[in-house]
Image (cartoon, rainbow over all chains, first blue to last red; front, side, top):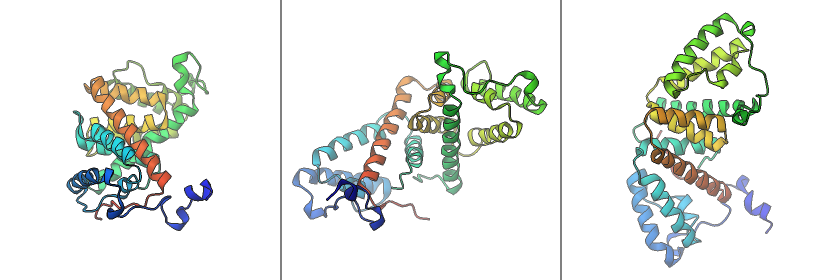
Length: 99
Length: 174
């Protein structure tokens, strides 16, 4: 399949690559999935793994690296969490990222 | 993002992003970013005789308000550059004060968001502006670097979400 087809299929409402179901997640990612679910339950009140994290389950090492950066930048430090959430929301607006 | 912020607060946040982003583009277009290197801005600053009397009065207000915000002694170049056009200057300055100096978001949050937007847009002039505002509020380099971490992480995740064309599944209850 051409890269163009892979990357620009939003008109179909489809993600670029298939999202894995919970039972398809590679074993190397399963512990991390549970930890992320616990945080998302606490922060967003949702029970399922959010799609942005689910999209990374194909590549557990990449998922882990992003998880560590997410924790380091959003959950550690002295800047109040609300300010961090506002900055992240504004950045997403500027980047026109509807997710 | 809600975390106790109501609809007016969210509108205020997006208004802040809208306002800062517009100023970022204008500072870039007027080449105010290059002044540090001794390069003149795209348009000359207006002479005294070219400035409307109302704008003169407002420039005194700008000097006072921005001086307190930034710790800078002169009227910021951005406002001097706009002073040639009374209506544009007046409407922009009024919006600037509304966005930055009133509302429910505190000054630290506003300056941090301004910095994040300016970094994302690559506006050197307003990176310095909002860095000065945070420094004037007592933010040490370690705190400011935390904002860069958030900007980095979210520019990264925005790219991932776009590249993967991920369908949104986290929505606030409206």
